[in-house]
Length: 487
Ligand code: 2AM
Image (tube, rainbow, N blue to C red; front, side, top):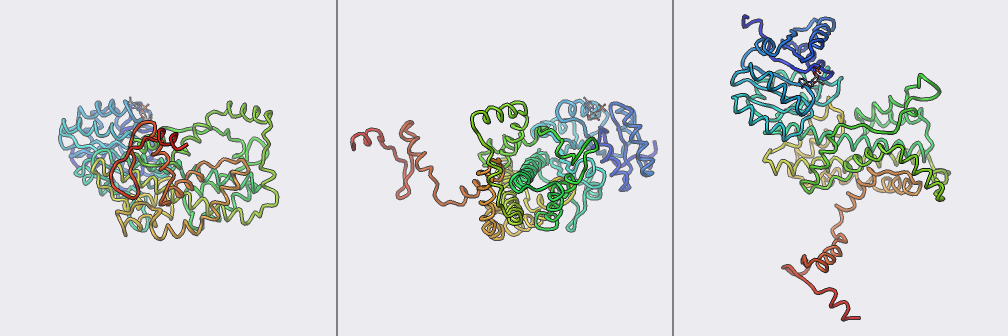
């Protein structure tokens, strides 16, 4: 084959994300070779490249043909199911690759798997990147947010491609070299954890507005549209407004009311919470969103619990709380509660990233992370530009909560935030995300917490010792003896 006919890059794994990313790359003018274990998907992709294009895309039915069709040093993106399929695909492809070639895993992979594969690839002279890809099907096709980590040399080999393929915002393409090792996967994992938090907080805002405020779907659509023109402007608020507008084609009313209240999930949110615990970082809003997904899964138990507790005399307080409510005020309060809760959730996510960056020496640039999340990805939002600027001003900021501008916004919103949470508690409408954010705020901002008592208890039953506020050293007290003696 003549050099001129070789592709610039290859992509293996042509499920939804793979197909769309391949077409995006081809559309940007980079000749690409594609491959999939089941060859019908190769032909499907070829067909799309022809009808949506024509774009410079060639299809290959064997790993060998596929690899040999790419110009050296080769860069091959793989987008197959995380876990064993990635190892199997690497084994099938790397057999035909040469030293200096690169494998880029674009799946939602556990970061330690990437770190293992980096070592395995290096042993064969291959370079490796673990690249988080966010934006779903639409993002992959028209501009995702990309989080590549691993070999810097490998990143430089594909920099021109990923910078064209990624979503474009006012301050550049939504891609940057994240750092070494599995940092790209880790950052994508935390992005997903933050996404869980955002979605949970939005669903709570919906719950309060619907069940305490009595808002109809039409009113909710209007409010979310309005919110999307202000400080909450974001992809998730925008799509939420759209969801409320869709009628049910099988019956009366809107489709949203017919959807079973049971959430699916694929695991990145759970990993985020596990990592937070592992690193001793508090991430209560993200944890609350995960717990809520678990509880939602117990649909049958919940239906039963509702019955049992009603028989036990539990009365719904929603009606009582909802009467005489000032709708306009409630809507404005919920908007403010949502915004303040969101700041706390992002503070948790960023602090988790910082803890990991310190542990692994990744040297993560938080301003850059916020910047590449401004477009393409699911959490994209105007508010991320603010976070970017905050970290540019002060890369060592202890928490978003204490950035002077965010601090002022939280203080301005705290009365509304407390009203919404208080109202929800009285009405028996659970708002675990908003409550977790508020408790996080109230715990973090207090110079003195009641854990002096916890320390005393630990010292009493386990002689764990305690420190004093007024003198240095570790102290132990014979609490029981002294207490009984003084009686
Ligand atoms: P398939 O079409 O041949 O099933 C999402 O499932 C993507 O991962 C698909 O492209 C799928 O290929 C691929 N995939 C899943 N398991 C795989 C494996 N063990 N080896 C290669 N590709 C795999």
